[in-house]
Each structure stands twice: as structure tokens, then as C-alpha cells.
Length: 287
Image (tube, rainbow, N blue to C red; front, side, top):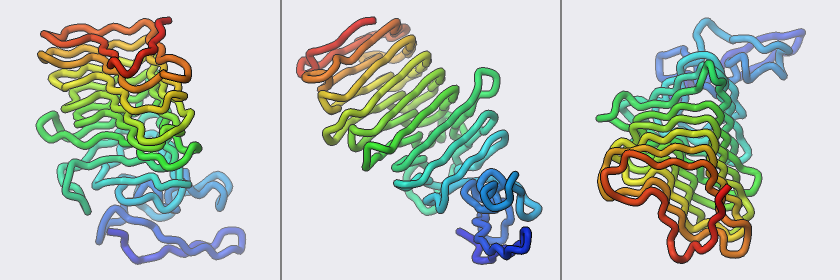
């Protein structure tokens, strides 16, 4: 989808040629990872400058460079990947809305993080992620890490209309930190942390509200390394379905620190289990 046209600019006697990374053929709005995004080119131009007449409005595909963006809307036009060695930072005021059509994909649109994703809203100006509506959900944010340096940090973020709000599937040497967040209207699981390898990573869920609606599980933790650190504190999980789990903990804490639950509330389930600790996950701490 990237327009092959290149821009050329002369700055302080230096000629710079770049790929604008447009949002589509015949369009001139910019991808978040475009070098024409002023938040991406400060190292070239000092304070950074918008190149061209059109703003940053979208993301899709694999990021071509580290990217930063704040303060406006971003259309998630298709599956988007933050590759290993790349980072994406989203600041206050960003609203990411997934399209109903997945350019280049067949399933619900996902934001997949192999490198680093930092989403840093504020109490007054949260960052939001959503699909078009609850009848047309998007896939959610998925962490699929390969190394210990990879991480996903969400702070003051509101996630709506996702099948899985946040999923962490991969090497358990990475970090998944979710603070001051709200996750609601999910189709399947609010937070899904599933490990597939050894490691000493961190799962922290803090000061967060998960409204399951009719979903199966609020927080699902399974298969993590015994040396993984899991802490869930000041968290409220609500739901209105029957036969579901508020929080399910499995296969974590045998040799390392126990999973810690502190000031956790599960409410509203018609039937089901508020907190379920699998028999193969023997250690859990409170407070």
C-alpha cells in the first residue's frame, strides 16, 4: 500500500530523500512510521517538522522505523507489527480505531508487538483503542516476544470492542505492564498471558478495571516460567455471564516468587469462579 513516490528536502545544505509511507495509493496522509511524521524526524531537523501538507492518520504493516505519535486519531487499517528492534510510543490524546476491513489480512485486525510498545496516556487524556462497535470487534493488542528486552507498557489506556484486550504469548522473559487502564466490551478474554518458554519476566496489572461483559475470562495467566513475577493489585473485574472465570491462574510460582493478588475484586458473575487457582499452580500470595 505504500506509495512509491519519495520526498526530497534540503535542510542546512544537506539533501535528504525519504519514503513518505502514505496511508494508501493516491492518498497523501501519512503512516505513523513515516519519516515525514514530525515526531519521527527530530534527529534530522532539530525540533522536527511535518513534511508535506497532510497529517499522520494511520498505521498498518510492519513499522519501518521507531515511531512516536500523540494527540490525534489513528486509523488501524490492517494488521500492524512492531518488529523486534523497533519501538512504537503513543502519547496522550491518541485514539486508535480499527477498520472493518483488514488490509492484507483475513482475521480481525491486531496490533502485534515483537519489539517495544509504550502507550502513555494521562488521567485527563487517556489513549483509547477501539473497533467500530461491539458487533464488529477487532483482535486487540498481542505481545509476541522473542527476547528479554521486549516489553509492552500500557499506562492510562482504554481498550474497547476487542476479542482479547491484551494478549501476551511468547517468551516469558519479556515484560507486560498494565497500569491505570480500562478494558471493556471484550469478546473472549480481557488480559491473556500465556508463556511458551523459560524466563524471568514481569506481568504487572495495577489500578485497572476489566468489564468482561459476556466474555469467558477477565484475566487468564497460564504456562509462565516458575521465575516469572506476577502481581495483580487494585484490580476490579466485573461481568454478567454465567460459568466464567474472573481471574484464572495456572502453572506459575512453583520455584520463584508466588503470584501476588492485592486488593482484587470480582463482581457481577451470574455463576462461575471469581479467582481460580489451578492445582498445578500451588503458590499464591495476598497483599
